[in-house]
Amino acid sequence: MEERLCESLRSHELPDYLLYTGTGGAKNWLRLDRSEAFPVARRLKDLLEENIASIIRFIPACMSIVSIGVGSGEKERILLEELIKKNLAEKTASGKVPIRYYPVDINTQFVDLALEKVRDLPVEKKGIVGFIEDMPLLKKHWRLPVLFCVLGNTFCNYESEFFLHLVYENLEQGDLFFFDASLLPEPGKEAYDSKKSVLGTYASRENALFNMYPLLQYGMDPEDFDFELLLSYVDSKIGPLCRTRKSLNILKDTEIKIGSETVSFREGDIIRMGFTYKYTYDQITALLDISGFEILRAFLSKDGESAIFLAKKLT
Image 1: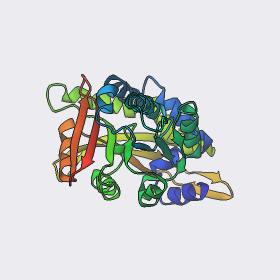
Image 2: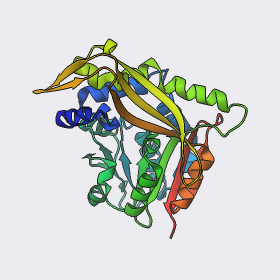
Image 3: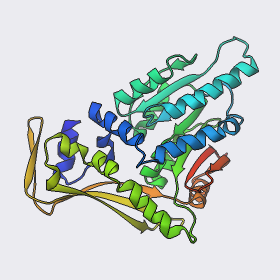
């Protein structure tokens, strides 16, 4: 990963996946995930817990659970516990719970953590290290049918056309697609406040430190660069979409040493980072529709800022 980090920084880029790598990346994300200043994942987990009984009714008892970008695995445990209860209630012929669980992440620390989180549950478990872009290869490791989970707002960190096409092409008939999203409320009198809230959350000190960590880790002085986050609109097939855009702005000539390599920066350099889309509920339903998915169930939080979707491929 150090080689990839060097290559990216020399191109004035810092892809988001590099924020989650290694022991430091895992610890930083877990710290941010639990922070009061960054409630995105916590609110999505709360919404899942509130609606889990309704969700489970639409999930066949013997499905395997695949979760990409599994992180701590807390939400997946909620799903597994309820699926186990459903299976036991249906009294499978073998007397066993025929569930397989595949936590997938680019960081082995997260895979190990997710496996440990469900160590006491009577399910077969197989951790996989990989990227969602590897889905055509990853699917060879799991047993069909699957509940394909992308939780923790991960869906919003990709270009939707690419992401939904990848999922559509690699799910089989009988598989289900389950994901969540932190939303931008529908336009109205609260729209301005919601945009301020988005900037307040994503530009918070806690999130800034998480994004700055790769440079801080290798010795860059925090006074040598700034974290900047902007909110803008981009065109799409369904109209303008709201999107954050992150960057690290170099304030003075400096350099860092990564392994045996030295990476130099000049004052005024801009290191481009990733983005997060802030969709409305209706925009996500439109994206699913044009991408060939049928929504089986969807849940929207009372404040309109979080949603969960369970969908399947149209035949």
